[in-house]
Length: 380
Ligand SMILES: Cc1ncc(C[n+]2csc(CCOP(=O)(O)OP(=O)(O)O)c2C)c(N)n1
Image 1: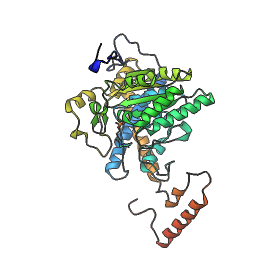
Image 2: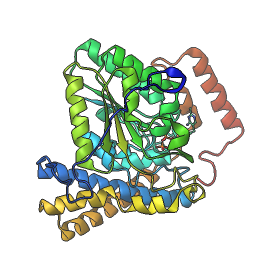
Image 3: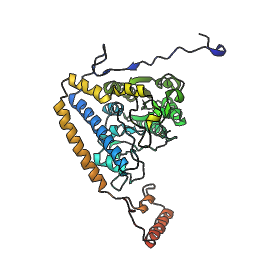
Image 4: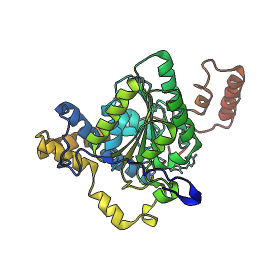
């Protein structure tokens, strides 16, 4: 069909929204895979755990005990559904809202809390903003905070996996806002050209802080951007954990078979503020928000577990009590830490600390001693 200026208008790309659970009762005509009850229970437990952590950490921020928090409440199905499809030696390059994937894959609760507090119990020694979890033992790499940089890291790691001939995959998580960054283009292009085992998972929560879809992109979906790079694009209901799991499983199988990367758009909605520094009531449509509140991924999954007779109210009540207690203990343990001493900033960048940095550390040490500088400062 001729378009403007006589150009040929390409046919509308079809990226249907994949669903399995729908609103919990199951999508008519779609059979839910019979995943092992223990796996499903672990996923549900992680969903409740991260929701409990989100509430606790937001309170701690309000009390001035942590500096910042970016919750994932309402978006639990995508990172956890993804983690369910991975092997222990795969790598995750997250953005802000994927701490739950790390918890599912074995991040210790006390480390999660210590990372948010940024003290000397934190494996990153307080050098990152809260919610930038990292753990070498589970191949979970800290985010840089700079939107989309993690995607080039994921693509590079995946290329390394290909060169080394391993069967591993790298996951690069992103938000919808990250699709407007140059790094998105570089990463997807490189992964596709090199046919690397990289899976890009865009959590389209429909906001980049206050910027909404129509201001972010002129395409109808984010999944169709895959066409430009020569890789498959999948659009999935991001609040449907089984649909996410199935989409990621499919992409992982392609990647392990040497067929290259996939872009997955997981459609969801940010029902919480962007972070503790945000007030979405200033830009969010109230009716739309109310509509999405009814599509709570935890409730959708709960209905499925109930139908499969894996869930009971008593089980969830006891589980929630356990999680509340575990979170309290983890925060207590983490709060027993103190601020890392200022000299620690000179270490961990180089395997062997250069003389220049050693000298600077000495000068700082002497200056602090002379000034009888109090460490940690009052209030910490
Ligand atoms: C390069 C860059 N530009 C701007 C920012 C400030 N910033 C932090 S989060 C954010 C929005 C990110 O939105 P999105 O990628 O959709 O992820 P979401 O937070 O919604 O999960 C922005 C603009 C940044 N961190 N890095």
